[in-house]
Image (cartoon, rainbow, N blue to C red; front, side, top):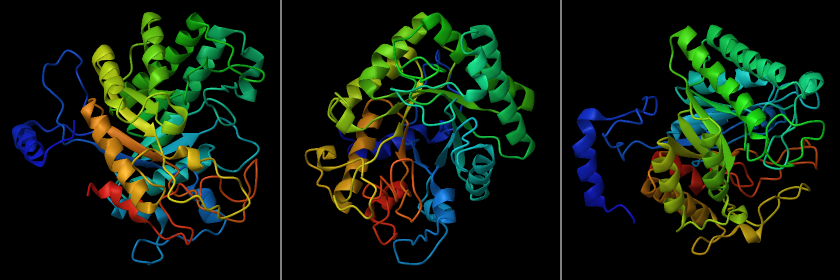
Length: 379
């Protein structure tokens, strides 16, 4: 159901004396309801440093040239998500040095950070969870591999903490629908849960131990692509002892999901109530045009359209507002837009020159912020 204005205002008043922030620790046994006014709106800006180095200029909605981090901060973005690859020798970006820069830029502007460990040298996703090359010699020695994962996770967090860059949220794996740290090709051939559970639990324990040693709160997250997959995956994870995490993260792209926008609240509610975890949609996007701004084929085309939301700037904005309502309705607490600043440049990806997302950013093809950027203000 949609929130009526009067109900929303009443709830704000009801919970104003005990308002939770996004940093609050949730006690699964607590009978206190979540404050429905608390909602995290974030942006995955993992490509931004590269876009700047490639010569991209960004402009706010008024047409003023501005640093993209500042544009998102001024739009009231709460959180910046940043991916981390282990040793990406094929690119200068999304390795530790680049991540330090991104976190520093976000935190300098008062935005919180979600650090996304891919545990791979390249993209990790439902179809591919390839072990880093450095760990390939121990890929079949699960205890040693688990120690490598723990030590790496803890070391990254220790180094960031020493620099005053400790993230508030840590994602242990990216779209881990299949078994993590596979080798040599990383393809999905099912899940060996005793192995998978040990690896995930060691990553989660590294986050807990880091928080304890540094005396700071770090909230942990497990991330699955598409809500229908999260429903079975978290059930199997729980059965195999993977329970010590704070957040369920899901990707939700209607194009690739069996769950409609109308059906999303039920899926979210099932996850939050069954596992007593907080939930955030950590990836979504919507195209504002079908025009391609470069020679790199765009990933989202006409088939990404959702009924009632035309492929336009207004349709993109309205989709985000509607999605937030559905997430809230199910008890979810956040939404992160994936790569809203991956604009077209002369640089190349592994697949083409330019951006494969230039029609789904929150910037027009002139790199000026579009209507969708207003989503972060909560308007």
